[in-house]
Image 1 (cartoon, rainbow, N blue to C red):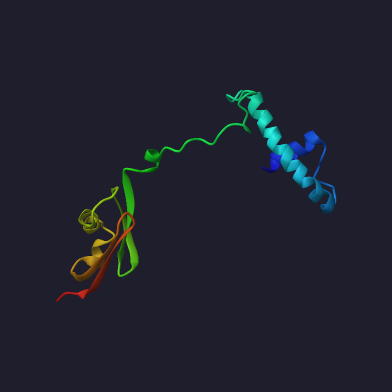
Image 2: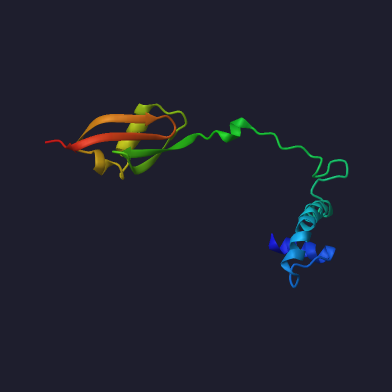
Length: 138
């Protein structure tokens, strides 16, 4: 960004170095405005599929594909007594039982739940599974 700013200043005769701060502040808006136009000119020079009829300033925002935003798997946080003990990759929109099975197989979670009584499970779909456990059984 700094290099582009300096290049733009050189092209349009405005230099930031050696000028008093007040002079730089007054010219700063003009320099940023010119930078936008300079970038547009570079797109045209490099042949980035821009034409005079369809310039960067007249083009529309790209369309969003909602299906591309949804992944096949999700990372689910596994907590024991409210502390993060591990994460698991589960299919999107997995049921609580599926996430539980992944949690029981996770090597980082096992030591905290094996041999303990699970008094409650709190499941937030697509986000986390929290085991509330009591001390060791026995």
